[in-house]
Image (cartoon, rainbow, N blue to C red):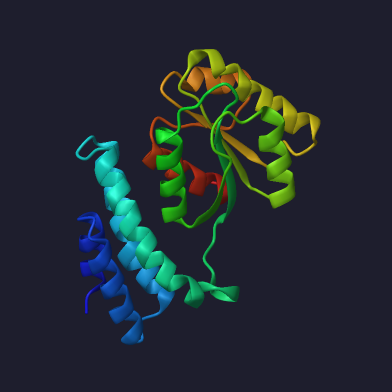
Length: 211
């Protein structure tokens, strides 16, 4: 069987087909890491690129991500232990005063598709909660989302809270959301701004690999 077919079915959002093909690949003795990389992640990378280019939209991404999850859940027992290809942990949330979560949820899915373990704090998250979670969970990245201009200053509070807690040199801080800009990111001293979820996931990988 072809791992390309897993990628194709994932892009089509066929969760049942993805699950069946992943099981067939496992039964055929193909390594779980290979199925993940050349089947599931390959498909999700294409979805991310299409979303970035406005060729597909939020509903298609979410359907593909659900298909990805079905396949990934089957692989989990085989990826445990020394063979786990996790890039590290990221904590994500929408900042205090803001209840919007579509963008945050997309970034979360893209990060998981790249191999991150993501701790989702939800919406309306105070600055100190981001930092406390990063410390307790040993996170490499803090991802802050905002859709309201009025809540953007909380992102600056997250950077300050990380400095106060003494972890600023250990954790990368990413910011994003419709009103956020590269200039604002620099102004508050965050590490990275991304314009969409696909870019966010790519940048997160680079940050963790020290690129």
